[in-house]
Image 1 (cartoon, helix red, strand yellow):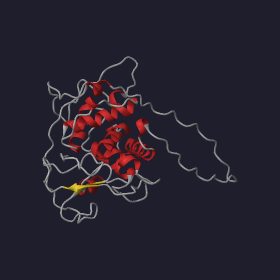
Image 2: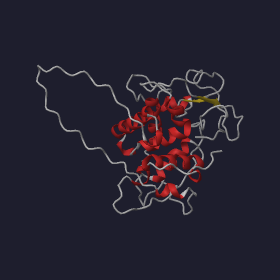
Image 3: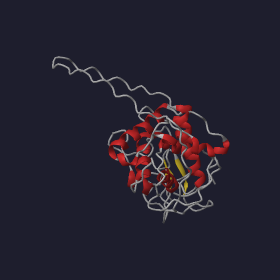
Image 4: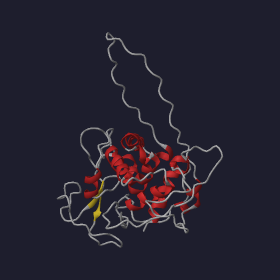
Length: 289
Protein backbone atom coordinates (compact mmCIF):
# COMPACT_ATOMS: atom_id res chain seq x y z
CA UNK A 1 0.00 0.00 0.00
CA UNK A 2 2.76 2.41 -0.76
CA UNK A 3 6.28 2.58 -2.08
CA UNK A 4 9.42 2.90 -0.03
CA UNK A 5 13.08 2.68 -0.92
CA UNK A 6 14.83 -0.42 0.32
CA UNK A 7 16.82 0.06 3.53
CA UNK A 8 20.54 -0.24 2.82
CA UNK A 9 21.34 -1.82 6.19
CA UNK A 10 18.81 -4.62 6.14
CA UNK A 11 17.72 -7.61 4.13
CA UNK A 12 14.19 -6.27 4.12
CA UNK A 13 13.07 -5.57 0.56
CA UNK A 14 10.26 -3.14 1.36
CA UNK A 15 8.44 -1.23 4.09
CA UNK A 16 4.95 -1.94 2.82
CA UNK A 17 1.26 -2.02 3.64
CA UNK A 18 1.18 1.71 4.36
CA UNK A 19 -1.99 3.72 4.38
CA UNK A 20 -3.54 4.91 1.11
CA UNK A 21 -6.39 7.34 0.67
CA UNK A 22 -7.75 5.40 -2.30
CA UNK A 23 -7.19 2.22 -4.25
CA UNK A 24 -5.75 2.64 -7.75
CA UNK A 25 -7.68 0.34 -10.11
CA UNK A 26 -5.47 -2.34 -11.56
CA UNK A 27 -6.34 -4.63 -14.48
CA UNK A 28 -5.30 -8.19 -15.02
CA UNK A 29 -1.58 -8.82 -14.86
CA UNK A 30 -1.52 -11.49 -17.56
CA UNK A 31 -3.71 -14.07 -19.26
CA UNK A 32 -3.38 -17.63 -18.01
CA UNK A 33 -1.95 -20.14 -20.42
CA UNK A 34 -4.09 -23.19 -21.05
CA UNK A 35 -2.58 -26.66 -21.18
CA UNK A 36 -4.36 -29.90 -21.95
CA UNK A 37 -4.71 -31.92 -18.80
CA UNK A 38 -3.45 -29.12 -16.57
CA UNK A 39 -4.49 -28.92 -12.96
CA UNK A 40 -7.56 -26.76 -12.36
CA UNK A 41 -5.41 -24.70 -10.00
CA UNK A 42 -3.33 -23.41 -12.89
CA UNK A 43 -1.27 -20.24 -13.09
CA UNK A 44 -0.14 -19.80 -9.50
CA UNK A 45 -3.29 -21.48 -8.27
CA UNK A 46 -5.50 -18.84 -9.94
CA UNK A 47 -8.52 -19.84 -12.01
CA UNK A 48 -8.85 -17.82 -15.19
CA UNK A 49 -12.30 -16.61 -16.16
CA UNK A 50 -12.63 -14.91 -19.55
CA UNK A 51 -15.67 -13.02 -18.27
CA UNK A 52 -14.04 -11.92 -15.01
CA UNK A 53 -13.89 -8.30 -13.98
CA UNK A 54 -11.77 -6.72 -11.29
CA UNK A 55 -13.86 -5.44 -8.40
CA UNK A 56 -16.60 -4.44 -10.80
CA UNK A 57 -14.24 -2.69 -13.21
CA UNK A 58 -14.08 -3.86 -16.80
CA UNK A 59 -10.81 -5.50 -17.81
CA UNK A 60 -8.79 -2.90 -19.75
CA UNK A 61 -7.80 -3.60 -23.34
CA UNK A 62 -4.16 -2.75 -22.65
CA UNK A 63 -2.64 -4.91 -19.94
CA UNK A 64 0.48 -4.11 -17.92
CA UNK A 65 3.64 -5.69 -19.35
CA UNK A 66 4.63 -8.42 -16.91
CA UNK A 67 7.38 -10.96 -17.64
CA UNK A 68 6.10 -13.76 -19.88
CA UNK A 69 7.37 -16.43 -17.52
CA UNK A 70 4.72 -15.43 -14.99
CA UNK A 71 1.84 -15.82 -17.40
CA UNK A 72 2.82 -19.34 -18.51
CA UNK A 73 3.71 -20.82 -15.16
CA UNK A 74 1.48 -23.75 -14.26
CA UNK A 75 0.99 -24.87 -10.68
CA UNK A 76 0.71 -28.50 -9.70
CA UNK A 77 -0.69 -27.88 -6.25
CA UNK A 78 -2.88 -30.97 -5.82
CA UNK A 79 -4.90 -31.50 -2.68
CA UNK A 80 -3.43 -34.30 -0.59
CA UNK A 81 -5.33 -37.55 -0.27
CA UNK A 82 -7.40 -37.72 2.93
CA UNK A 83 -5.87 -39.69 5.76
CA UNK A 84 -7.42 -43.14 6.36
CA UNK A 85 -10.03 -43.29 9.09
CA UNK A 86 -8.83 -44.74 12.39
CA UNK A 87 -10.73 -47.35 14.35
CA UNK A 88 -12.31 -45.97 17.53
CA UNK A 89 -10.39 -46.71 20.72
CA UNK A 90 -11.85 -48.52 23.64
CA UNK A 91 -12.15 -46.72 26.95
CA UNK A 92 -9.37 -48.86 28.36
CA UNK A 93 -6.85 -47.74 25.77
CA UNK A 94 -4.60 -44.95 26.92
CA UNK A 95 -4.19 -42.07 24.49
CA UNK A 96 -0.64 -42.01 23.06
CA UNK A 97 1.54 -39.01 23.73
CA UNK A 98 1.30 -36.45 20.92
CA UNK A 99 4.14 -36.72 18.41
CA UNK A 100 6.36 -33.74 17.82
CA UNK A 101 5.53 -31.92 14.61
CA UNK A 102 8.05 -32.67 11.90
CA UNK A 103 8.72 -29.70 9.63
CA UNK A 104 10.16 -30.03 6.15
CA UNK A 105 11.83 -27.43 3.96
CA UNK A 106 9.68 -25.93 1.22
CA UNK A 107 10.50 -25.64 -2.48
CA UNK A 108 13.49 -23.55 -3.57
CA UNK A 109 14.82 -23.40 -0.04
CA UNK A 110 11.84 -21.94 1.83
CA UNK A 111 12.77 -22.46 5.51
CA UNK A 112 10.69 -25.22 7.09
CA UNK A 113 9.11 -22.99 9.74
CA UNK A 114 8.05 -20.41 7.12
CA UNK A 115 6.74 -23.13 4.81
CA UNK A 116 4.60 -24.48 7.62
CA UNK A 117 3.31 -20.99 8.48
CA UNK A 118 2.25 -20.26 4.88
CA UNK A 119 0.42 -23.58 4.53
CA UNK A 120 -1.17 -23.11 7.94
CA UNK A 121 -2.58 -19.74 6.84
CA UNK A 122 -3.96 -21.31 3.66
CA UNK A 123 -5.66 -24.01 5.74
CA UNK A 124 -7.23 -21.52 8.15
CA UNK A 125 -8.49 -19.30 5.34
CA UNK A 126 -10.02 -22.29 3.55
CA UNK A 127 -12.23 -22.69 6.62
CA UNK A 128 -12.59 -19.04 7.63
CA UNK A 129 -13.14 -17.57 4.16
CA UNK A 130 -13.38 -20.32 1.49
CA UNK A 131 -14.57 -17.83 -1.11
CA UNK A 132 -11.16 -16.19 -1.11
CA UNK A 133 -9.36 -19.23 -2.53
CA UNK A 134 -6.12 -18.37 -0.74
CA UNK A 135 -3.09 -20.44 -1.73
CA UNK A 136 0.15 -20.68 0.20
CA UNK A 137 2.50 -19.83 -2.69
CA UNK A 138 1.02 -16.32 -2.89
CA UNK A 139 1.83 -15.77 0.78
CA UNK A 140 5.29 -17.21 0.20
CA UNK A 141 5.83 -14.79 -2.67
CA UNK A 142 5.08 -11.86 -0.38
CA UNK A 143 7.21 -13.32 2.40
CA UNK A 144 10.13 -13.67 0.00
CA UNK A 145 9.89 -10.12 -1.33
CA UNK A 146 9.21 -8.45 2.02
CA UNK A 147 11.85 -10.04 4.23
CA UNK A 148 13.52 -12.98 2.49
CA UNK A 149 11.30 -15.30 4.56
CA UNK A 150 12.27 -13.53 7.80
CA UNK A 151 15.94 -13.40 6.82
CA UNK A 152 16.08 -17.11 6.11
CA UNK A 153 13.75 -18.47 8.76
CA UNK A 154 15.28 -16.75 11.79
CA UNK A 155 12.59 -17.94 14.20
CA UNK A 156 12.12 -20.47 16.94
CA UNK A 157 10.01 -23.64 16.73
CA UNK A 158 6.86 -21.62 17.52
CA UNK A 159 7.50 -19.12 14.73
CA UNK A 160 8.60 -16.26 16.98
CA UNK A 161 11.38 -14.23 15.36
CA UNK A 162 14.73 -14.21 17.13
CA UNK A 163 15.11 -10.52 16.27
CA UNK A 164 12.10 -8.25 15.56
CA UNK A 165 11.80 -7.00 12.00
CA UNK A 166 11.16 -3.25 12.09
CA UNK A 167 11.09 -0.98 9.02
CA UNK A 168 12.29 2.57 8.60
CA UNK A 169 10.23 5.42 10.07
CA UNK A 170 7.48 6.52 7.69
CA UNK A 171 8.49 10.16 7.83
CA UNK A 172 8.18 10.97 4.13
CA UNK A 173 11.92 11.33 3.69
CA UNK A 174 12.14 8.76 0.87
CA UNK A 175 10.74 9.16 -2.67
CA UNK A 176 7.14 7.98 -2.80
CA UNK A 177 7.02 7.37 0.93
CA UNK A 178 3.97 8.50 2.85
CA UNK A 179 4.26 10.36 6.13
CA UNK A 180 2.43 8.49 8.88
CA UNK A 181 2.57 9.85 12.40
CA UNK A 182 2.57 7.36 15.25
CA UNK A 183 -0.75 5.57 15.73
CA UNK A 184 0.02 3.01 18.43
CA UNK A 185 2.19 4.84 20.94
CA UNK A 186 5.13 2.78 19.74
CA UNK A 187 3.64 -0.45 21.12
CA UNK A 188 4.28 -2.51 17.99
CA UNK A 189 7.09 -0.65 16.27
CA UNK A 190 8.92 0.99 19.18
CA UNK A 191 8.53 4.45 17.64
CA UNK A 192 6.27 7.01 19.33
CA UNK A 193 6.86 9.62 16.62
CA UNK A 194 6.28 7.86 13.29
CA UNK A 195 4.78 4.52 12.37
CA UNK A 196 7.05 1.79 11.03
CA UNK A 197 6.25 -1.44 9.20
CA UNK A 198 6.57 -4.43 11.50
CA UNK A 199 7.16 -8.15 11.18
CA UNK A 200 8.27 -10.43 8.34
CA UNK A 201 5.27 -9.40 6.23
CA UNK A 202 5.72 -5.69 7.01
CA UNK A 203 2.47 -4.22 8.34
CA UNK A 204 2.01 -0.73 9.73
CA UNK A 205 0.35 -0.81 13.16
CA UNK A 206 -3.11 0.40 12.06
CA UNK A 207 -3.38 -2.25 9.34
CA UNK A 208 -2.07 -4.94 11.65
CA UNK A 209 -4.60 -4.08 14.36
CA UNK A 210 -7.45 -4.21 11.85
CA UNK A 211 -6.66 -7.64 10.38
CA UNK A 212 -4.54 -9.28 13.08
CA UNK A 213 -4.83 -13.06 13.15
CA UNK A 214 -3.74 -15.65 15.71
CA UNK A 215 -2.22 -18.22 13.37
CA UNK A 216 -0.51 -20.32 16.04
CA UNK A 217 -3.52 -20.45 18.36
CA UNK A 218 -1.76 -19.13 21.45
CA UNK A 219 -4.36 -16.41 22.05
CA UNK A 220 -2.09 -13.56 20.95
CA UNK A 221 -1.74 -11.92 17.52
CA UNK A 222 1.94 -11.03 17.27
CA UNK A 223 3.33 -9.35 14.11
CA UNK A 224 6.75 -10.83 14.92
CA UNK A 225 5.39 -14.37 14.72
CA UNK A 226 5.48 -16.19 11.37
CA UNK A 227 2.14 -17.95 11.84
CA UNK A 228 0.31 -14.81 12.95
CA UNK A 229 1.81 -12.61 10.22
CA UNK A 230 1.04 -15.13 7.45
CA UNK A 231 -2.60 -15.41 8.56
CA UNK A 232 -2.94 -11.64 8.84
CA UNK A 233 -1.55 -11.22 5.32
CA UNK A 234 -4.06 -13.73 4.00
CA UNK A 235 -6.93 -11.91 5.71
CA UNK A 236 -5.79 -8.57 4.36
CA UNK A 237 -5.45 -9.83 0.78
CA UNK A 238 -8.93 -11.36 0.90
CA UNK A 239 -10.65 -8.27 2.29
CA UNK A 240 -13.49 -6.84 0.23
CA UNK A 241 -14.63 -10.14 -1.23
CA UNK A 242 -11.54 -10.66 -3.37
CA UNK A 243 -10.94 -14.15 -4.78
CA UNK A 244 -7.29 -15.11 -5.22
CA UNK A 245 -8.28 -17.67 -7.88
CA UNK A 246 -9.23 -14.71 -10.07
CA UNK A 247 -6.03 -13.25 -11.47
CA UNK A 248 -7.47 -9.75 -11.60
CA UNK A 249 -8.55 -9.89 -7.97
CA UNK A 250 -5.16 -11.28 -6.90
CA UNK A 251 -3.42 -8.49 -8.79
CA UNK A 252 -5.58 -5.85 -7.11
CA UNK A 253 -4.95 -7.35 -3.68
CA UNK A 254 -1.16 -7.41 -4.08
CA UNK A 255 -1.14 -3.93 -5.57
CA UNK A 256 -2.91 -2.47 -2.56
CA UNK A 257 -0.45 -4.34 -0.34
CA UNK A 258 2.26 -2.32 -2.07
CA UNK A 259 1.44 0.39 -4.61
CA UNK A 260 3.90 -0.81 -7.26
CA UNK A 261 3.31 -2.96 -10.34
CA UNK A 262 6.97 -4.04 -10.16
CA UNK A 263 6.18 -5.34 -6.66
CA UNK A 264 3.17 -7.23 -8.04
CA UNK A 265 5.36 -8.79 -10.73
CA UNK A 266 7.94 -9.91 -8.18
CA UNK A 267 5.35 -11.52 -5.92
CA UNK A 268 3.74 -13.36 -8.83
CA UNK A 269 7.14 -14.47 -10.12
CA UNK A 270 8.09 -16.01 -6.79
CA UNK A 271 4.63 -17.51 -6.32
CA UNK A 272 4.99 -19.18 -9.72
CA UNK A 273 8.47 -20.34 -8.80
CA UNK A 274 7.27 -22.03 -5.63
CA UNK A 275 4.46 -23.70 -7.59
CA UNK A 276 6.77 -25.08 -10.27
CA UNK A 277 10.12 -25.40 -8.56
CA UNK A 278 11.74 -23.20 -11.21
CA UNK A 279 13.73 -20.22 -9.95
CA UNK A 280 12.67 -16.97 -11.66
CA UNK A 281 15.19 -15.29 -13.94
CA UNK A 282 16.35 -11.71 -13.35
CA UNK A 283 14.08 -10.63 -16.21
CA UNK A 284 11.08 -11.89 -14.21
CA UNK A 285 11.98 -9.70 -11.24
CA UNK A 286 11.78 -6.02 -12.21
CA UNK A 287 13.42 -3.63 -9.80
CA UNK A 288 11.08 -2.27 -7.16
CA UNK A 289 11.63 1.46 -6.83
